[in-house]
Length: 405
Image (cartoon, rainbow, N blue to C red; front, side, top):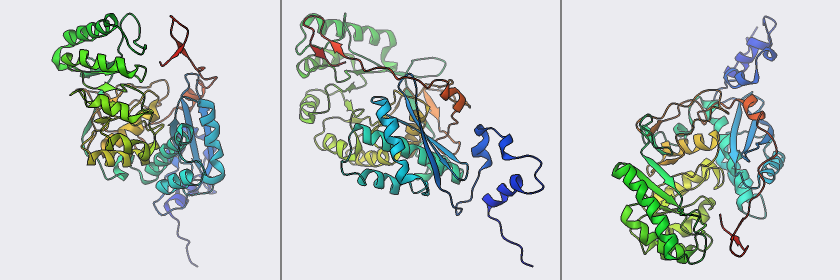
């Protein structure tokens, strides 16, 4: 009589489904499902479901489940939150029933399977799904994502956020502000002086030991941006971010030629094709792609490779939640040209079941748990599901016209 051979997954399942089982899988909470569903590298695994969650703060999460019990999490663009959430569910027709570990293949299929390519919502959907698939793949192989991307290129990742002696964070970012935000096409000397004086005061407070970036947020018009850049240069900003909107790259390139301070941009640019023009025209020296918007981990890895050819560093944009941070840190750990991680000192205790490794000396240790390296607490997340924040528009108080914010 021959004895059937069990693979790792079948053996684990037999512990719970066999006649000698003392308890059933149902007795375990969903939070432990991934730990119980370890599978071997040659075992079959299929996607069974895609779910999306829109939080009241407009963060959009996607959860991908498999028949092995392994789940993956990702985040998408927070603008057009409902559209992104709905669009991700449409991908179910393609993805359900397929092996989630063919991450790059699925990226290509989702992107090229559509007649219309790219766009902020489309790439946001791809970004969230891509993160979740990498999360599943890492969990299947029992390693963090950066080990699947060639291994770590560094031991820790520098972060910026809140300057603190406790965490050692010594980099921060501010906006250009005087008595109001400078949004007019040509601001007068009073506004330019107010913005400059405030930044000068910060430099005096923190000294030369703290790097201070200044984010124009694409809300400053080019003539005013030119004035502010020159006025702020003597105070040595870390970088000028989004000095103008990235829709006309030539305008940004012209401003870049007028200053020795590095220009940074990227949070509103998606896919490798969007960043190509920035690099070729030297419109910015620092790229800030968003892993929830530009195409996910798969695409950011390619963008980083393109940037390396131009000696440009990557500083991932991150205004969002724990998947955004974790995916950005996995990328940061795997590329040679990483500069610094935005809001890398955020801890997200309201969404995580397990704390992140603490920031020390201004750096976050590498995330070493499998997949993205974090554990989402689904109960905490579902408690925050609700109607997202509405769109906001900003207006010139003098004439009522719409302005950038």
